[in-house]
Image (cartoon, rainbow, N blue to C red):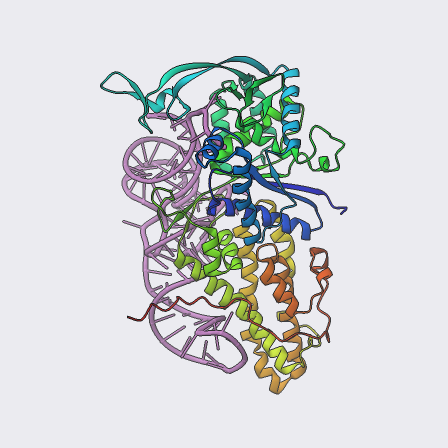
Length: 516
RNA sequence: GGCUGGGUAGCUCAGCUGGUUAGAGCACGGCACUCAUAAUGCCGGGGUCGGCGGUUCAAGUCCGCCCCCAGCUACCA
């Protein structure tokens, strides 16, 4: 690979839970970006993984009667299974329990100490022995018996102070604001950028970055009673992967990352703490953090207690992988919250995929198969109408590339589907079935224009729906080596033998209600 | 409370620095076509552009006030 590097990451997922739609969504967005960039000739590194430390894991493992490592081995596997199920294409899967990660964390820590940005202090707060966790003042209330309890759990809390190392975040307020100012693309979407800036403008407190209340984590160098704060540990994974602290590692070429994809809940860690840590360690911050929204389920907030958690595996088993991938990125402007409605998903599947795109391929290819001897038909002189359609399809490459560069997946798909609609209009206008009787040569040209349009469109569909696109390109006999974007202008060659056409996007029909 | 973003056809949304009869997709109604996955294409109905007031020759598009919705307002990831 000689192209410019492109490093995209998902958050590392916390292994106290099984994967749900949120995990699938974040990773899907990264997968489409990674696939797009690879096809576009970039030198891509796509990283995902699991965050396996912390008190919650320690407790969950104990509850399961397992050692923490064995426990995380097991749960981490469920995230790797999801990668296969969703056809994601990460270049690596990192785990915070890897040795190299301990080394990276400790190296970063020492660098922060050397820079004078870490000091030993005291962490104090309202501690619940039962919950084994701290609460801030506002999360507690004093009951009628004059005892203070955690509002959420009802457990009694007491004022506890423990020694803790602190990161001098307060000293970074101005430098962070300056950084945001100079790098307007650092946080997306715009509304999140405003939130972060306003948060930082409010002033920053130093950050407690170690705990002594548990042991499942990365020990602080030189003071192993202290375990590193989970976020310092977790965020470091992005540079662990690149070989930190060994900047001669070949993978170091990927740092700084082009994009950290995150859910909107963890934007602060990525947009405030992380760049501060990195700048303090004299490392470049990532170039961009995109915070996407959350899904609701048929209008309802998703929560475990409501029992309406969306299982991506069930969705894929019911509607098919590519339709689900398409729906998730098409239905909602990327960055906004979205509502997952089965009706809407079926509407997209049947309307956009089966009727518009799948049927376009099928109607064109079946005419070719029946009338043109199952080869790419001859291309005769082109009319204005032909050129109009070809130019629209040809302009798609640059337009879609621009949208993907902004992570505007929905807009990229809208652009592609506009050309699909144009192509369907063109079929009706040209009526190749009528030309068959009057002007077979013209019919052949029309079919060539259509096949070529489908080829261009489908090349761009590849990152979103890899399997389906591959099947369509197979039907156009596009060689595997001609499916990268470098071959976007490489037209179909008349006379090339074509396989028998087969529908790629079957309509979804509701399973018949059980007869009673 | 403060800050930010938003309230445009039944639904989801476009509408950049103000300028001809406010748009798209879906849904709905009618027509055409028959190559195709009963798919496709064409036409159509439907909106006091949250409310009030203001600036202007002219305002979804600018200003003010008000109403409603969402997010943020730090150490659970």
